[in-house]
Image: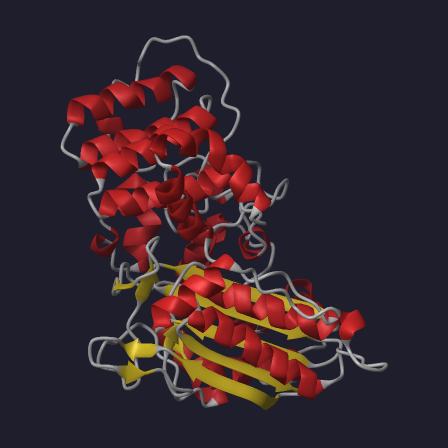
Length: 482
């Protein structure tokens, strides 16, 4: 029965109601009854697709007006999700880390313009004297976002902040600090190290004594404990529309990792934006980071088996919180449509994840027609996410499932669509390596090096054994696929 419902919904995009169709002079921004009804329709649609498993809380002026939990916290044991279920918050945790930093700024222990040199964390002088706390908070440090291939090969080998800090400590900056903005998970890891150095306390103790305990967040946990009551397991929603257990794939750190409930998340943001329990609203440094007097704030998180979203309508005092133990940014898809309906009375069509659509089209078209036909089909179906990223994620999923021929075909399409992107050849090389053909992996990656001799693999710490001094005529790269 569920499969039939999923197929039906997958074939028909579900539009939000047009404002013009509403009877009479209805103002959707203030009609809570209509908002609740439409929020429920959105949540149910994503659940019927087989995609969403989690909890949703919609509040007005801090008071819940709609709550729902769907799906299973533990599929094998058939334990349902509930409002007491804990979910991983992913990068929403960065807001908690920012609060801890700003608390130390208010106390005079940290200055916004203090450089890394002040904290003696082992960074080279040319980096340590340039990067400031303000740069780190605002993603303007020049540090990369993702961890290098050594981390990707075995994330669980890196347990502590210090172990993760060493990964990029000796690497170059992407740009001069303060001249650009690039989202950086690593930057928030550095902030966690600064907090521990300044206070002499562990990051977990700082969270507990400065946020969890004062706000009585009794259902929030850091770090992850499998034995914690009401802890959800994590499931990836794969290209074949199945929820597959992935478990914990990396150790938590200041860039992401709190396990919490929708109610605790609401309590945190109410205290942050509507009270002085955590930070003083009179302090201009606080408003520099959190728009206390603004109209809107959002924060999102995602990863394997993790999706979380918070959208705050500060002008009309609505709070939308969605936590999921499935992935594909499904929480963000739901919260965005609820928020859009609050603001406009409309929202974007509900679609399956791009990777699922790509796989459906690959199966339907066949490998030969897919390369030429998929780009047009993808755009016509309403997907605006970068097609290269979609194909790369699909290919990696097929590699993990050891569907070698299909993976080679998908990465082959990636190479044909982006022949000047070294990342495309890197992905294809990785597929060959995983299939057991190291020689073909080296040959394929050498094509990436011919395009960009200084290119480093995202998946192999030794560039598949290729020489770093490959003599080749460099061709300019026209874009990546990650």
